[in-house]
Image (cartoon, rainbow, N blue to C red; front, side):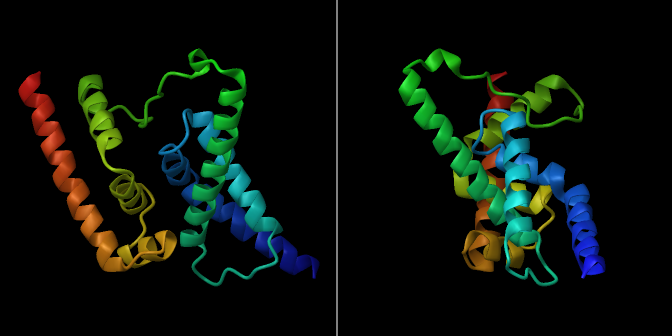
Length: 172
């Protein structure tokens, strides 16, 4: 029994090592800071580790679902706290989405703005596909939609990103 528990723990540690950065980026869609997103990822892993369910051989889509719910729970808690405090000045400024520098800070900022302007369903699919490295089938499972809907949202997101970036370049 001890051997089985260690193996499960090692598998979860490997999953965390492989997917934590993408999961944090996914959680950032809803949360105001990187530290809150990291906390949501930790919360999701703890919840899943405590769960008696079996996750099969493809737990990654389940991880994304758990992170989404942990992020939304955290967001609801923060919103309740803000309403109690009645002060909007406590909001942190938006942090950068990307840790690695792109060709220039200006281009990075343009891309961040374009991603934040996407409708939430498109932003989710972009994040899951590009940074989460999930297939459209896995995205569909994660979000409770068909894989065709996931693929369509991805295409729309790419089209909207291109249009937004072109618009930004024209106004610059």
